[in-house]
Amino acid sequence: MGVREGGVDVKNVFRVWALRAWKGLYSRWMGLFLGVSLALLLGAFGYLLGPIVGQFIREGLSLNIFNFSRDELIALWGIHGTIIAFGLVALSFAWNSIRDIETDPDIIANIAHRLRSIELIAFLLMSNLLIGALVLRTPSQPVPTHIGLPAGILLIVGLGAILNRFWHVLDLLLHNSIDDKVEQYGKDHLSGDFHSPAGDFDTYLGHYFDASRREIDSERPEKLREKLRRVESLLEVLLENDDQMATDTELWDFVFNNYNSIYRRAVAQDNDELEQQVINSQSGVLWISMNQWRNRQS
Image (cartoon, rainbow, N blue to C red; front, top):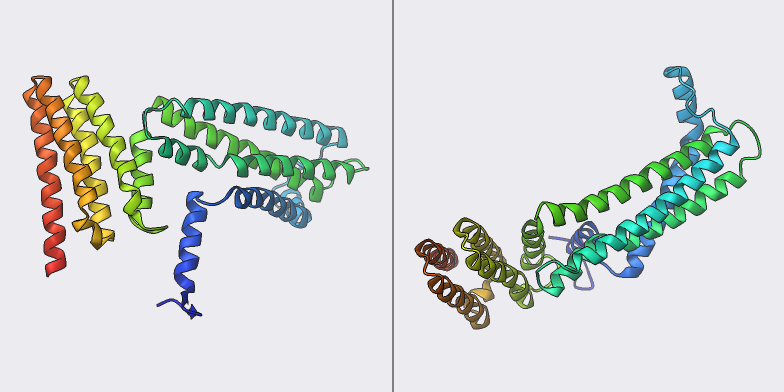
């Protein structure tokens, strides 16, 4: 049991807050705060530990990698500004590309939110300001390690963050991992970790039902089965974490109306394998619901 203060489960509140921070499910202002805070923390870390790290590198490793001039530090500042420009172009490409993905608008909003664009932009801008301040703090030659180390850390972390976000978008667009992302987001929401899942099931299940219709039209039974397995997986998560959903008529009307719709679509294609895949999946859903009912009775 968590420690309670005034009827509030503090441990559970902290757990939910930590989960939301990890998943990027927070307000724009919180994202701005996190981006700025990360830049300040990395800058302070490099500034305070610079002399210690520099001495260790010079004496322990016999290297002198921080022996560069103020002009070179200014050039690094300019490179960081170029990284910011590249980052904004990359994010613009990401936003425009994600809007064209065939899925529910709420899922597109979720994907865009989890790109952590606000945090990234805030981090890059604050990092650039910090590097500029470090340049102003360097009137002498060569650049001391407590100046060079934080500038280098901010540059490397900024470049790594941009490449990571850009790869996230390319993974969605080129490797067709949208279904994996939707299943991940669906399990986050339907598990009830953040709020009641009762109002979210149609968004995530609907993504796979719509994708199933496209697979039927393309006559790809293996791909159809893959999409329908995701429906079964999300329903299992939903029923395990919310007992009331087992008897929710809105949920089951939505599920079986969609199954009837895609079955009729498969029949219209006159493809026995497509029809069998829909029947197999619907049987799997019935078994999942029966198992959940038995678990509650035992």
